[in-house]
Image (cartoon, rainbow, N blue to C red; front, side):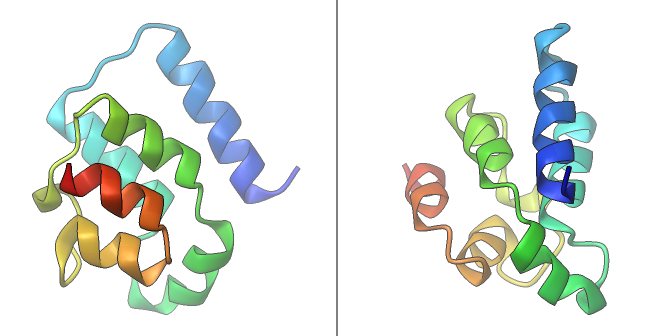
Length: 92
């Protein structure tokens, strides 16, 4: 199982047990999914990006741009990955 599949599987198991959408939990999930903790991981982030997780959080309206500590915030991170569906969800 690749990194992306493990991440999506874990995410679904975690939130099916009883979703808690507090600020810090969502921020930590975004940091793992978007791999924002290091610029050295940019190439890995594009390959292993799990858009399903971000899409789910955006649909639940529990994400804000300040949760993503990169230049451009959430929209910048999504744009860098070419995830235009999630960009559209984030703007709406």
